[in-house]
Length: 434
Image (cartoon, rainbow, N blue to C red; front, side):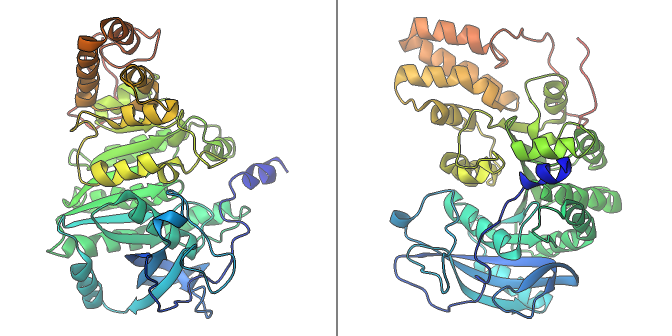
């Protein structure tokens, strides 16, 4: 009974209208269209308004899908506006415009070339637990649209029964899909016109993504060279298991960015039913041993604990915060560190959390952003530079902020560690000698 009650909290798609994948074929003036590739290991449905079930299929099936997004005046950034009735009203709701099965690798390659932007980047998204096929497609369309990412979008959707009582089935379905995801990544990597690949996964999908990369590295001695960035949002991963997975990726591993939140209720439930071992997406990255391990491995960790969103479980903040999703598209996917400009993601999130915009407010946002975001060494240096700039105009304010943040950006009352950890060895199990 306790497990059933806990699983109820993990529900992600109950009460939504079924059958939204039937294409209308119509593009309504004022709407936006997202053209994406949807690859799946699900079993096909005889109902063309559903397309794929939650059962396991054979082989990898690929469709080119166009999703219509309502005009900006009629929607909220970060939200998927599901149809209340069918057919959908594209002026106010998401709608499926076109679905075209691609039955050969040649058709896949032709679609990729046609839809590749000038950046030559591809973004592959892997959804989480309790998702129907349409949940994955519509959520990814929302992320692509709201982030403004200049990418060719590809969603990989694995067999989820979208039932709160099928957690174990879903987890085994991720294992079932590892080879198929690796195959998809190899197909994309083999396309000469594509220059870089970012893999982004959410929740239980992070297990599938990291496992596919791990077995790729074991097979080839490294991950594919075009895979430059991996973004794990609310990763439902045992921290001990992740440390071993990461080591298996070797010294040429792509750069990892984690979105974590200590108030993630869904991961709190997952921890309780998974042996009470910390979940990667719920750790306090400023606390030891995590801070040292992440810095040594060169892993960027963005802590969204203080960021408020409309998600009652605090499990989808990365996609529902307008500021965060835009920064994903503008910076992380493009391969930049979050402090290549004067405003780092931590400062932006701090400003969002506090609702401040004045000079004094900006100083305050630097002070609170340390517990919100942990960065690479360049980010930590950037905080010192921000404090110094503020000090030239607000000496008293900057003085107190400098005491609060410290050189390493630690929370109030935590002393600065002596001696920097090396960042050239991807070993999250390692520790620094002081």
